[in-house]
Image 1: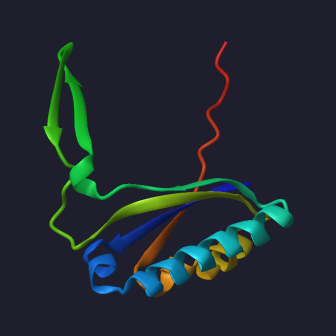
Image 2 (image 1 turned 90 degrees about the vertical axis):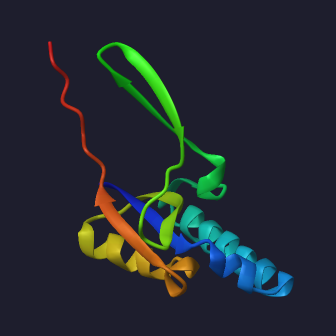
Image 3 (image 1 turned 90 degrees about the horizontal axis):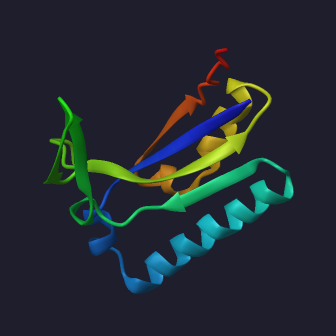
Length: 119
């Protein structure tokens, strides 16, 4: 079954870290990705630019609108995702716990919805 590990962190964390600490964190993330890939469990994964680089796009009553964001009241923002294959939720929990950024933020773990085929 496929699971999405949605990584949430406080982006200010990266401003407080030294360049060397950021490099080490990036290396540990890449090493963990390589380990998951070798086990056939990594399907996709990407980090995201900070929230202020994004936009919110909506369509209401056929009209499109955009606004800066996404912003939330919480300090932690979505920083990236890892799409994995796991036997069950317990295995997916173990994978999520191994993501290095879990030490600095939190990982939201969600099963992927299998869209049914409608005739």
